[in-house]
Amino acid sequence: MLKIYGRRDSSNCAKAFWALDELGVGYELIACGGRFGGTDAIDYRAFNPHGKVPTVVDDGAVVWESNAVLRYLGNRYGKGTIWPPDAAGRASADQWMDWGATAFVPAMGKIRTALKAEDAAAAEAALKALTAHAALLDRHFQANDYLAGPSLTLADIALAPAVHRWFLVPLARPDLPSLAAYRERLAGRDGYRRHVAEALS
Ligand SMILES: N[C@@H](CCC(=O)N[C@@H](CS)C(=O)NCC(=O)O)C(=O)O
Image 1 (cartoon, rainbow, N blue to C red):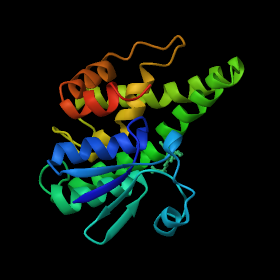
Image 2 (image 1 turned 60 degrees about the horizontal axis):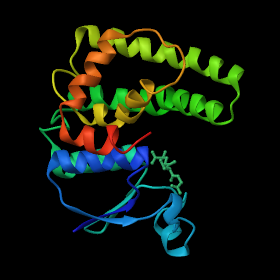
Image 3 (image 1 turned 90 degrees about the vertical axis):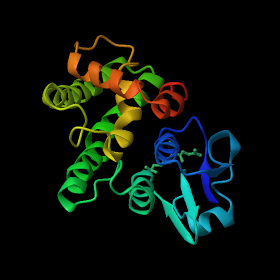
Image 4 (image 1 turned 180 degrees about the vertical axis):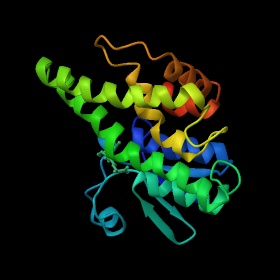
């Protein structure tokens, strides 16, 4: 059975849990990271040199980096479902996954760090950058139901924790109705509710 090393309150693990549920793939969760520790253990570092979660071990394959995990799951279990079967469709999902990993998610990380440090000036600056990204998403959802077309793909799963957290930022934010409507669409799925909305703060 597929094994996943991680924890329920990790945004990067949440993506993998949701994808696994969406694909109907059963798994064994090995509690790891955060309060569970284990990521510094020599055995863990041997298969995940950067010592983060999640890591997936499946039939001889070892995969870390959450977006690589999503792509692995899509290629192995999901082509034609939440992972488009054609190169152009996959590229369309891929581009949002890369944009998320390099723009939207880091901007969310900056604001969370500033809020934790109670650094109001840094939080305001981070909010400005984050809002530009959120507004870009809002414009996209004025014309599209999902990131890579008319139905859910791994791209939506990859960005979902940051989308969820946008609505939790405790600062005055612009109204982005199309992004809010998209979040409602995601909330119609069990995996989003269980692994993202209910598990992540
Ligand atoms: N870019 C990596 C980031 C992984 C990462 O930072 N994971 C966090 C949890 S969200 C982690 O391992 N934190 C340390 C820990 O849980 O012990 C990915 O997407 O998988």
